[in-house]
Length: 98
Image (cartoon, rainbow, N blue to C red):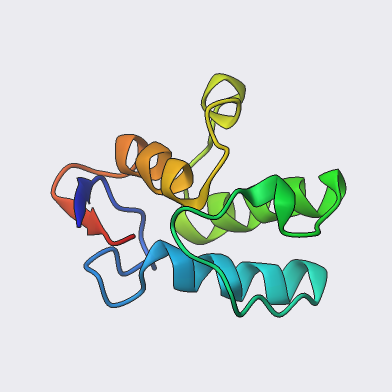
């Protein structure tokens, strides 16, 4: 787990790892069930168009009550990258799993 700052309403303690959250977000915003996803999965290769990818970002921002700056968005290629960006944005002491 990576220590991160945490937004209200989000368990960043390993109970809801980012891969699980990503699957939940994909199903909710793109009606896409992702079975074969890992922290190393490249987001752009998961079959979602750019609009769906931006909706995923909005989903995470809303759920975690953070804003992901454009310069941070450019760093996100994999689900692991997403976890790392969230780790930098969430309150100190919060933890998020891969």
